[in-house]
Image (cartoon, rainbow, N blue to C red):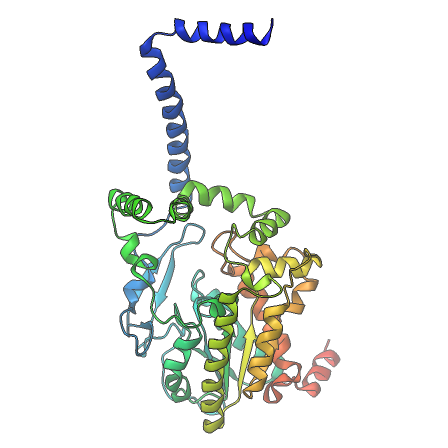
Length: 404
């Protein structure tokens, strides 16, 4: 049959369709798509459950003079889609330290740690966080009684650390341990979260959320970005990403394509956003370095890579124009220029097969196994001679070998 004949047959078929069917067929098609999508979303919401409230119940979120801080003697629970239901128990000083605040016990070497959500152990039970595990590991290696008091906080990015640094010094540390991640650089200048990033969003009903998102799409010129954000909040989308991101290659490709968290710090040269973030980190490190020096307390900064960065380093390959070590090198220069010790964990991930399995696939925080890995790496680096007072007692090591 000729092309003209085919077109004629199609027109004839169309003409034979009743008007009702011309309306019903598209409705059936779109209804099927909606039904399948709705079913996937329902299954995802049953499997990847999320609490309606969380850590915001235990924190002060509206004081720009201190940044986010914990409410003393408060307890709350939070479950993210990929984590268990996690308890947050804050002591009388408002810290998730796993111990009460107060004077340092005699003959104890006290580390006071500060940082943001990773250092807080936001997605894991406190007892399974590296803040809880590290003191025991250091005590075994050094033969000293080591205590770690954790003053890290949700949204405790670098400028927030400077706002509460007097509290760090008031805890009478023998060493200040500052945990840095890519997010701490990206959001270094931010002090308080926006309502859309905390419980105000989660506390709204589904209809309210849909209406807010529709308003956002209609009112914004960046409609595409708003739709992407809406899909990102879909539990079905999260479920799909959760399983797909367990493939190392798929995850790294997604991160580099910008489909996951912002990856501007991988670029060489870095994007303007990350350059500005580093300027703020430099300013904050100068403040911390000066205050620590005046108090006669050493401070060390530890860089913990994110999931995509650790995977690339382990793979040992990345595309042209990408450098997973660039941010790490910039932070070293900043910290050391202000008198701090820089503890670099990134090279250690070269010897860890598939290190991305130690992070939640979509959320990106380390999982409990990740905190155990960080404990091992930190104990090794802190006792390697970078911090003289924590250098491994060689005689103890020889005694341990002789006793086997």
